Length: 113
Image (spheres, rainbow, N blue to C red):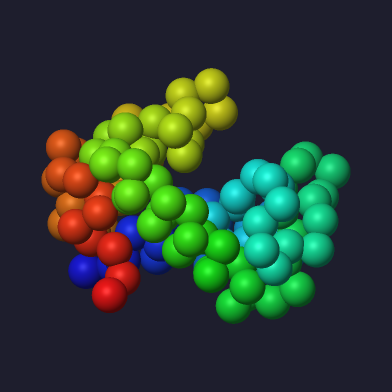
C-alpha cells in the first residue's frame, strides 16, 4: 500500500518527467503559502522547492496539519483537490484504493509515525 503522500504525488504527476510537480520539486503540487523550505512560486502559484526532499517534507507537513484538524479522507481531498480544479471524486477513489484509507476514515490514523 502507498502512503497518502505517495498516492497524492502519483495523482499530481510527480513521477512523470517534465510535469509541474517534478520541475518544482513539489510532489503534492502545493500552492505557495510560505511553506518552510520553499524558495518561491511559479507563474501558476505552485510552490517551488530546492530539492524533492524539501517538497516531500512540505507535503507531509500539510497532510499532518489537516490530519490534526480531524479531517476524513473525503474532507481532506475536497480541500486539497477542490472540484473547481480537479475531478475530486476520482481523486478520492484513487487515493483510497492506493492507500487503503476509507473515504470516511480520519486521515490522522494514517500519518507517518
